[in-house]
Length: 135
Image (cartoon, rainbow, N blue to C red; front, side, top):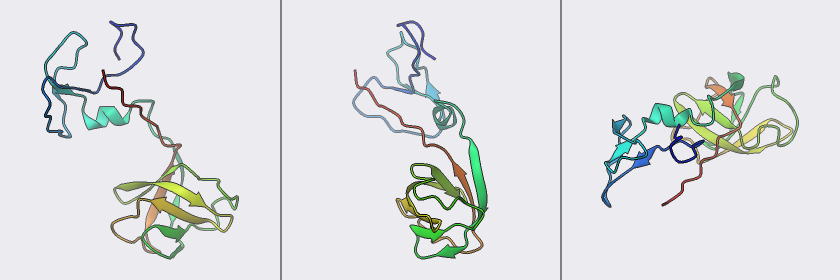
């Protein structure tokens, strides 16, 4: 957390030249007074705004495509209930862009591998939003 300039924000990338090759690991120093290159680790970046909260989990009950599938009867039958939340299947997460009263989920972007009726899912939310500011 940066506090030297009034604080309350987290710097996660700083570079000295026009090119920067991102990595998953932390690299360099990102102190406010530094002019060197640096990056907050992906794990720490994902914690900005707090950790994700698991709200629901289960097994997919029907599949139409890699972006449209149905959740089980244990999920709420209220249209838009999970709209904007994150759904994770395996190690991949997507944003729920539509949710019907019939428990049909649409995600964006589509999963690279189409879920199956044995795919376990977890719903987290709501998705954190990040604003990138250029100085």
